[in-house]
Length: 190
Length: 190
DNA sequence: TAATTAGGAATGAATGTTCATTCCGCTGAA
DNA sequence: TTCAGCGGAATGAACATTCATTCCTAATTA
Image (cartoon, rainbow over the protein chains, first blue to last red):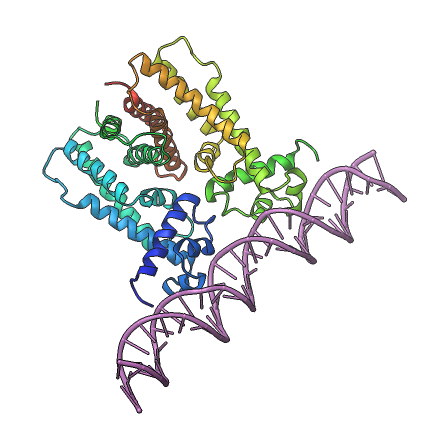
């Protein structure tokens, strides 16, 4: 069972797209095989079963997203600049991996995720929570549940991304700047 | 085929809970029957099939939510007061129908929704959009895509509701006031 | 160089399972 | 006794998974 090949990558990226667009339960193995242009049996050469496949995908992208946010993190800059770094990381990650964040968002908490997936996701949330807590202590971030604020930021950003993808909205720098301002105003202390 | 009975109501509310918690595709008819304490066959006395059931549910709650928002709408008051009315309507609706908004949010756009469901949902969005457009014209609401702002409000509110339901957060008036402020700051012109 | 062959990789038809839906016998009310 | 309403076993379709077979590739032999 090879660890990494073209075929394995095809299977993963096809699965990512289908899981993001239809959801895990509405996506069948033959659909993935067809999209990846491999036989259905081939998928089982690389992944024990459908649940292992979805957990592999989930962990892979959660880690990659966490790494993207952590890269060059300006820990000594202002809270606003840290927020900017995080927001930019989110836009960059999404433009490089079109379906990944939406897949993560729609599948976190699902019944088929294993402990590792849950832990990886919690670790990501805790990093964001830590940022907000720091900001709260400094009196710069609103005194609200961190989870609610994280939801506002992710929800807003991903909804925007859906609109861009579906062609309902043109993707301009101004747009992203505006949404970043909106999210920042949602969480900063007034 | 009776139009309304205790059993029919049981089926609908069981289906609502399961669809909200597991999603349409991961919810089986036997699960719904079991939860509603009826035979699997009984469900088919009231609904032609699973898709008719989910569409019935979707339309029922979308309309009820729209009615809740429209009730006593303060069309002549300030934008801020209109926003307050909408936000309060959302909290009231959610406390009266625990799973309904989350079900609507996670299933809008799904492949199994029929035209009526889509139209009902679009009508709801358009009402919210109209409110935001008015506010934009008056220079009170931010110049951002309305859909993105709607997403921020719903996303934030529903995430909060999840936390309350799961017991991670205590449901206080302060909390709701704080989240309303946060959402308002996210969409108002600064 | 050309032919042969071993063994991993890939396939898709076959299998067993689970589901939505149907069907038929039972029950209790009139 | 009849029959509407019900329950849950029966059915057939669709699914995840398996497995016997084929296909490739690259090493070996002549």
